[in-house]
Length: 118
Image 1 (cartoon, rainbow, N blue to C red):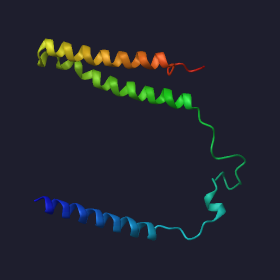
Image 2: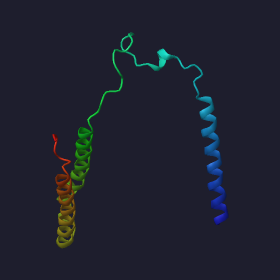
Image 3: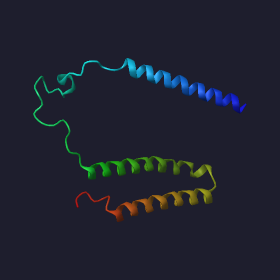
Image 4: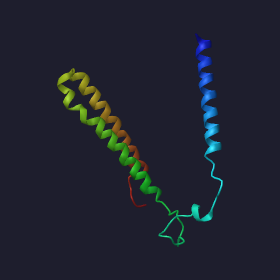
């Protein structure tokens, strides 16, 4: 049985490697033109760099927002399931989850991740 699984895994690896190799050969662009590789601005040459500096602080705040947004979606079902389960286990689970969230919030606040300006 293990030999069959190993053989199938090896066959899958070989087939996927061959397909990836063939696709990389067929997908190569032969002409690397400067005009095709430059950003397009209404037919004119670009005036500045296409890469703008990005605020790392803004990115960190956005990631923290997404994390707390997902946590809110995990908190929403807590109230409707209260009548379906044991009140002690519901209370313990809810309080434990909220404590974990508050510890995470305190840690981010303590590290200064929630301050927009320095």
